[in-house]
Length: 144
Image (cartoon, one colour):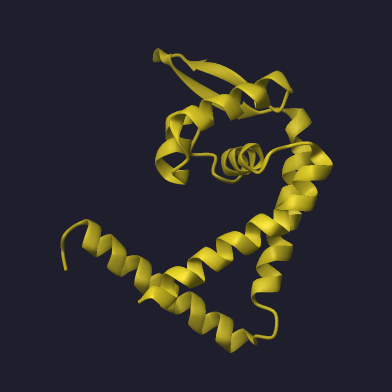
């Protein structure tokens, strides 16, 4: 099963390499870019805690990068009315062009991953991934 871990690690390394030129051009660290893209692509996740729990980035790193993104005008903090201690992170208008370019980059990376595959191969891959996701959910719920 070691090959499976190597596969996932290669994808992560490939994505990091794919992002490097854009991050350099934008003057953003990869972690700041990841946080911004995560918030933009997942509107149901809005807090630093969400980033820590879902993206598995250490809390101190999340804090440092959020502070930088706020200072540079890419994010704003908004207190939640029901609980003023809870703060939502909102992408600003300034972030829109970065997010648009980031999404284009993500689509290009995705297309590169599936280069030299046909529609049947992609369908089989995604069908298998759905089954694996269902199985992982069952494991997490201790049903298997």
